[in-house]
Image (cartoon, helix red, strand yellow):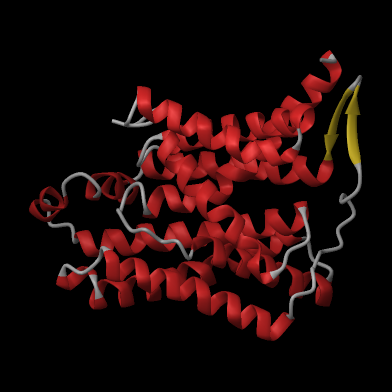
Length: 289
């Protein structure tokens, strides 16, 4: 095993893990904190990728800048989706199997609409740093991975600060544990859940921009992340953003090392094997309560 190859595999894995953290952050909020199994989240990530693609082609803007501008639109979309979900399922206590079917339908509709509009051809963006690399000694940092990784960590840090330092953020943390206590404090738990779900969907805008920078996308690209994001969320500990970040980085490094030395076909098996082993030893996840 060559030492420089191992180091570069770890570096690539950390950057990949940071991207996984951005993809999983929304699931960590909706599933880990609100107990809403939003399997449509990867579909909205692909929607974010296509919005970044359209604006990039038309105006030449950077996908990350486009995603930041699109955050309010995705937040509003999240509010609408949660309102429909709440009135149709959660309000009547039917938020388990029927709610899951609702989000599966959203995933299917999103993918079909994107297929009808854009077809099945791969789409990519044109930004100056795609294809370049930063080399320090024998360590190589592909810019198309480094930029999304750095912005992902900044986004994750911002989410953690918001949830731990602001009143609304603390209410989001509380609503997952004791919504009745929030009502005693004159706080509407449904409003808090709507805000939290909207934030979770807004993260899809950023993750979609990162994805289309890293690789070309097609409407069905989101499918490959459905199992992985829930696995990372569970591995990190439900409701723990720091745990999600650690789990994402760990999965990224393991996948990168496995792909480098044993082939990419082994990477998912090793990653999910680690998940099963961790849950056998610690069922609550790495930083779960």
